[in-house]
Structure formats: C-alpha cells, structure tokens
Amino acid sequence: MSNISSITQFLLLAFADTWELQLLYFWLFLGIYLAALLGNGLIITIITCDHNLHTPMYFFLLNLSLLDLGSISTTVPKATFNLLWNVHIISYSGCVFQVFFLFFFLGAEYLILMFMSYDRYVAICKPLHYGTLLGTRACVHMAAAAWGAGFLYALLHTANTFSLPLCQGNAVEQFFCEIPHILKLSCSHSYLREVRLLEFGACLFFGCFVFIVVSYVQIFRAVLRIPSEQGRHKAFSTCLPHLAVVSLFISTAVFAYMKPSSTSSPPLDIVLSVLYSVVPPALNPLIYSLRNQQLRDAVWKLRTV
Image (tube, rainbow, N blue to C red):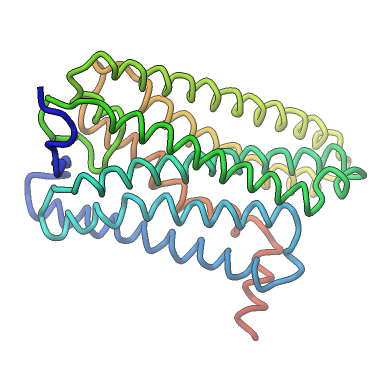
C-alpha cells in the first residue's frame, strides 16, 4: 500500500480532446475570471473610497467581494494555464493549497451571505433597531466569525483528507483538486471519516440555508405590507437576486459533495463545480451593483473625480 508521501503530483481532468475546444474553454474561463476581477475589484474600491457606503450592508458586500476574488483565484488561474499549455498536472502542495483555500473562501462566503440576509431582515422588519443590532462592533464580530470559521473548517477538511493513504493512482477526475475525487483514490476505510465530516458540514450549511430562507420569508411578509408599489419593487429587486445566488451556491455545492458515486460522471462533475465555484463570484458584482442605485451613483462619482 502506497501512501500520500509517495505522491508528488496529481493528474487533473482534461476539458476536451481537441486543441480547438481547449482554446475555446480557455477564453471562456479567462473572460469569466477577468469579469470577476473587474467587478469585485470595482466594488471593493468604491466601498472603500466612498464614506457614504460605510454601512453594514456594504461592509458585508465588501467582505463578499474579497471572498469571491479569493475563491475564483484558487481554481480558475490554474485551469486557464493548463488549458493554454495543454498540461494536466498539479503538484501535491498545490493540490493541498487548492483544497484548503477553496474551503476557506467558500465556507466564509456562505456565512457572509447568511449575515447579509440577517442585515436585510433587520433593515426591513426591525428598522428602528437597525443601529443597535448591527452596529460597527457587531458587524466586525460577524465578519471575523465568518473568516475564522472558514479557516477552521478548511483546516479540518484539508488535514483529514491529506492524511488518508492513497493507492488508487493519482488521477483526479476534476479540473481542480476536489475532495470527493481525492477520496476515490483512498485505499483505506478511514476515508469514511472525511465523508462523515462532509455530511456534518452539509447539515450545518443546510441549517444556515434554513435561517436565510426564514429571514426572507419574514422580509417578504413585511414587503407585501408596504403600500407603495415602488417600495415593494425596490425591496424585492434587492432580496430576490440574493436568494437566487444563495440557492444556486448551496444546491450545487451540496449535490457535488454529497451525490452518490454511482451518479458521478466527468461532464456532470465539471458543470456542478463551475456552478458553485466559478459562476457566483462572477455574478455577484452584477447582481449587487446593477440593481443598486447607490453603487451606480458611487461609480459615476468615481468616474467624474
């Protein structure tokens, strides 16, 4: 039985068999990555520079953009490099870093999304208590809790996964190092420990998702009581895209990690991984900026300075 110490590199899945298709995927991934960099970088710059946006909602949005930049930078640059140069190799240490940082950024991002739903709930349902419940100290503590929990969650899964003995080769059937595909290489029943950890994590994420849904049910009930149609439209246009992004993120991530191995196939696995790790970081800036008049005004003000 060979163990992890004898493996110095992993083989990643090729996107296509022909150079033309690989080049097409390269430009697609590069375009998505540049859009995510531009959109999230612009949001970070605007919120940092405009003191009118130093509020809890934009503070959480700033954290979300930072985490989006981190998560998409963990996988896409390596994928685009492999596509351009037609290589499918990642070093052992690179694989460890990918697993750790992906879990770190995505775990923290999900908690930030939960805090953002709480922020909208307090703003709409308890506006008189907004300053008390979401003061500066409370927001900083929430953000620190999200980043800290993401770090511990990533450390736990990374240490547990890469302590497993591997004897099924080194071919990872994914375009980046993803835990379910690494577990397939294990030759020990101890991999069930990591599976149980993933199941426990899925339960925690589902609990957070229930919290988000309950928050939005309360928000929608309050919005429907708003007499102004314009006010209802503004509230729905802010909340519905947020709920859609959260639903896409959690549903594809949980299915990617919890689906039975019998239903696994390379095309399906790639689509699911793209939907939870690549699409949200690129969509979030569009959803939160194009539908937000304050951000659009801040962008215009920045252009005229």
